[in-house]
Length: 412
Image (cartoon, rainbow, N blue to C red):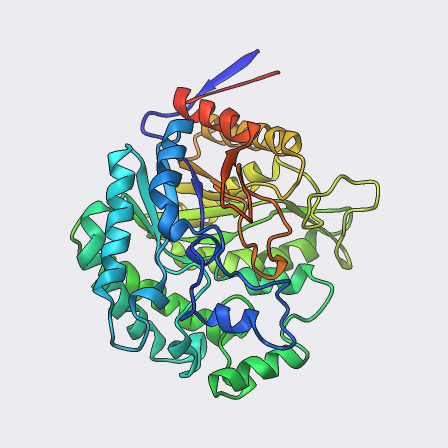
């Protein structure tokens, strides 16, 4: 039996996103998208996990399991439901969430934008509009003024590179068909002005999002509070099949490098990894029928986390937090084994001197997985959709024990 002891003050926790767990986020553009006649979403989010009201019990449960950190997101659509109209009640709700974390010795890692935006933003063109960076900075300034003294770490955005990643791995064009036209009509814009954060791959959108990140980075450092600020990315472990080295470097540059390089000088980068991406001379090599896969159709390859961490640290030169890592499966024994392999690969990174400061598993709860609806099970805590009853899975106890002891024990 070999043991690895993690650094003192290492953050151990889980992660959620507001729209996926809170429920009834009706001022969000995602709520609109879920209810389009030809929507790509398997089902609407509805009440989700009712975390908006049940957060005291959920945070207490995470502490009881042994975690010392919790990453969750603020909903811009709740804080600023109409342009320039800020909700003191919503800000107070999030302040109570933060206070509850501290009451249970849970360090809150706060994401200011996790995919969803207010409906009103998309009437202006969303993440394709040149004024969006100032609008986002205004929201961040109002919010940090009210909450900053209780924040441990802040992520400005969640996975701005996701649309390109989806474009690379999905077998269909997600912005094609009737739903995209219906979405544009719902917001009163033309399809070329429909700047949906999760789906649009326009270089203009990356430019607007990164300008927004820079402005938010400045604003969030004005306090109150003193905490590190970064951004999270969807990062595969990029590997070349025989003869695929040149093609792999080309794809990695488009999906990762162009998003990592502008983060040099930030306080940290959030690494979000679930799988590897194998690339041959002709492009993506999909796992064969004989390969074990998760519910998302990805190869089960937990050691991908180590590769993603190393590459992010190498390109950016800044500290790393693992802000998401996990597995979609109905079989929790698979999830537990996945965590064990992933943590071992992260421990190897630390042994080699990579500055990794925390691990936040996805997800705390079985939740609304965007277009997949409630089908994929990614939580370490099961949620009964009829009663909202929470039931921790064996993986929750296992991971919580690692968090409590700060030690990973595994077979050599």
